[in-house]
Image 1 (cartoon, rainbow, N blue to C red):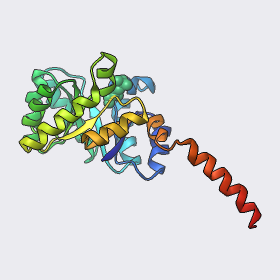
Image 2 (cartoon, helix red, strand yellow):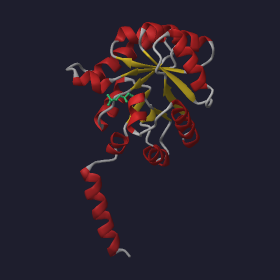
Image 3 (cartoon, helix red, strand yellow):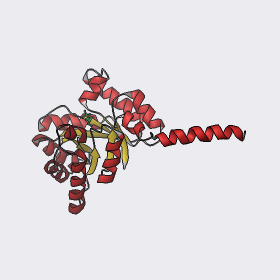
Length: 217
Ligand code: G3P
C-alpha cells in the first residue's frame, strides 16, 4: 500500500518525506485555504513547490464544475510537473472529463466518492485513483472501511485498474483497516501516520533496554 500525505502544509510534507515512506501528496481547496494560499498564481506555485519536495504523485484539484472548465484547468495543472494528478469531483461533467484526461494521457484522482456506484463510474472512465472519503462516511453513521472492502472486491472481480486511494483518514486504525480492506493507497494527515508508531510496550521495552545498556557500558 502506498502512503500519501493529505495536506498542503510544507513543513508537514517535509517531515513525512524525511521518514522515507512517502509516495505522494494529496491536497484539496480546503487544505490550500488552511495554509493561506490565495490567488491562482499562488496556488500553482504552491503545487510546483510540493512537486519539487516529493518525488511521487501530487494531486491538484480543479475548482471548475463544467466539462470545458475542468479540462482547461486540468491541462494547466498537469503542465506544472509530470507528477501532477488532476483531482476531479464525482459529478456528471467530472466523469466526462475523467474520460477525456484518460484518453489524453493525464493522470486523475476522482474525489468526493461515497458509494460503490460512483466507484464503478470512475473506473469505467479510466480514473488513475479513486478517493472514497472514509472519515466523512463514518461521520454519517455508515462504515467507511466497509466501502473500501466493497470497492476492492468489485475492482478485483471486474479487473478495473483504478487504484483505491482511501481519503478522509482520521486516525492510525483507519490506515490499518484500509490496508486490510484492500486500499492501494492511504492519504493521511501527518498525525495519523505518526500514530502508527505508537505502542506503550515499545516505549517501556526501549526504556528498559537503555537502562540495562548502562550496566554494559
Ligand atoms: O483527501 C480528502 C480529505 O482531505 C478529506 O478529509 O478530514 O476533510 O474529511 P476530511
